[in-house]
Length: 346
Image (cartoon, rainbow, N blue to C red; front, top):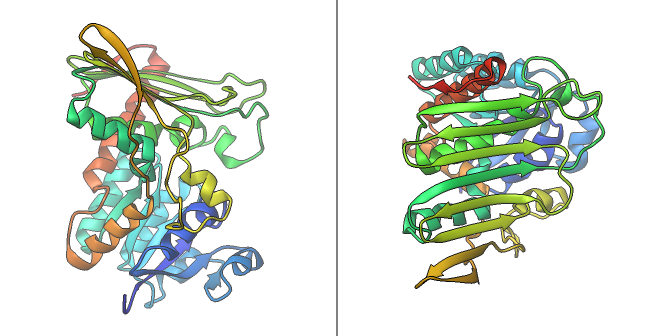
């Protein structure tokens, strides 16, 4: 595509390096122009021709930059997004959108005044297994859903000294993985009637929440969301139980591992999940097990949708209202856990 949108990436830690930079470069119509990092050598080892600056505001002031992607620590998301929008840039914020619903509303209002697109990076909408779950539910393959279980578990028994695991604003598993779990549930079922959350510390010497168990109550079903740092092995990812049968899926989507391994997005095998899910269906009173036909995932679809929103005025792949809806549940989940009770949505 001629004249691609020039992107400035703020932050070149794990998320910026492994996810955003390669996905931006692999999306037609986008090009990685600038990276904000204090380690220019690290960036140029991967992207020799990009501009590297140590200060985000220098990137925001660059008239060549069209869009800013914020992949810095969580407590910087709101101020950096507001500053970038103030300079007339379109903005993507890695999850969580901000730390509070109030901050999120301020970011959205700033984008509206500036006439710029703002969106939160919810790449897990394009996980292969989630796309498969969504298709099965929409097709009615499992009948009416009674229970939806979504797990994002890992085995990390050693607490590391990094900002995500510190007892500070935006730290802990609820802010890290909660946005993904909540966003997927909202995509499938819409807003719940109520939320009941247990957010806790389980590992020895844990300083921030490393365990999450949340139930979203709907009129005729429940959505149970779970994340832990002490689950070894090929753990459960999805379990969907309905009036006609169940779908079970173990193991996480392959795209993160592919990106870690340096696979170029779009290469042969990209987004193909090697671990197919299993369906157990009621066939005239007899339970039959079969492998579920799996969708292919592709995180590039997020950035392609964002490109189209900027260039053609279509809705962004994750709208501001959807970002606000997740942040409302993040806050209510914290309240529910602190007060040890179910909280109804107004």
